[in-house]
Length: 96
Image (cartoon, rainbow, N blue to C red; front, side, top):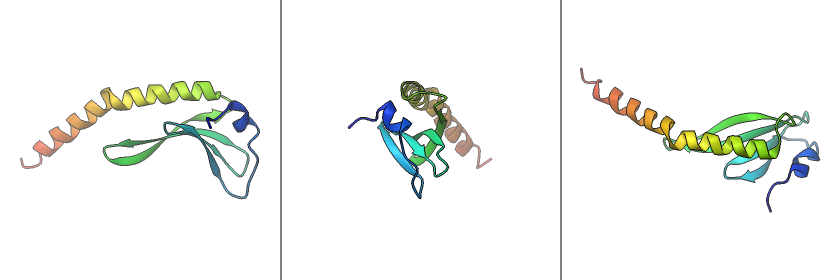
């Protein structure tokens, strides 16, 4: 079942922090102090990373999904190319 705006809005406080999955790495982290954070999990260079997008309700679920799409486009495009270039250029200069 897809995440809905109301699921995040009415998320209840629990003893521990928990996540509400939004798909494609996007999730809402519900904290014990009732803070709601939009986060995105992704893999870069074979390692799992996490990107904090913003807080709820300062941005809605739809806006968080747009930010996720933009971040993935950057990670798949110029950022990945730059990281690969930096790794290849640094590994070639180590022997000098």
